[in-house]
Image (cartoon, rainbow, N blue to C red; front, side, top):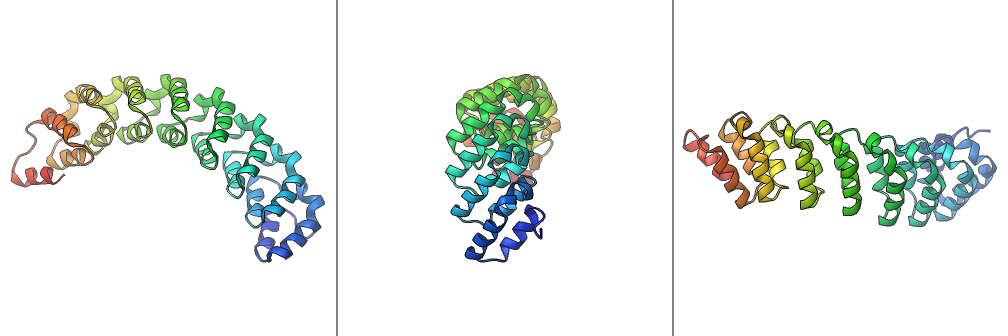
Length: 275
């Protein structure tokens, strides 16, 4: 009667030693499925249990896991404290509801971060039909791409391809997505946003962050798309330096050839050379 929910149970467990935790868990075992109200509370309790005690808790709440886990943050909070086997048990228990549990790309990436390659495949397959609803913006897209293998990245890009030009708002976001892609995938993404590149790239820093992930041909495509705005994007040596800072020698040459006579004096030239 004293322990009303999982947050309270976690608070008490925090103050006990391992043996005392076992005694308390045994005392409330029959009520655990009522005490644990959501995934956050489940995580609060799991963090203080050893592997044997995990088993007791899981056995008690397994039938209610689909009700307990409300969203991807709560699922991630529970997965955080489990070993690989236990993560597999939890994922299998909620597999039928994963497409409802994962609300957005941040939650998707959070859960993926606790899973091995095989379990990521299970999760990806479960939510594949809702990817266009889950991915809200380019930052979320990048956060998910970082945990996927190349085949899954292909599927994700193909699924959201028609929305990429709306999802990606600026060069910072474009760079975040490009960094996890192979050369072919970079080409797919670049082609999807090519018509909006002159609006997407806001300044020299963003231009450099995008150019660094492209091959020479793709660099030419990007610079060609923004050539009429280059004087606005890179309007002084500081902006040029920001763009050059992340590029290799070949790409520096491509960019310098495109922007020509921006440098007005030796001080500006020195700034660019230091980049």
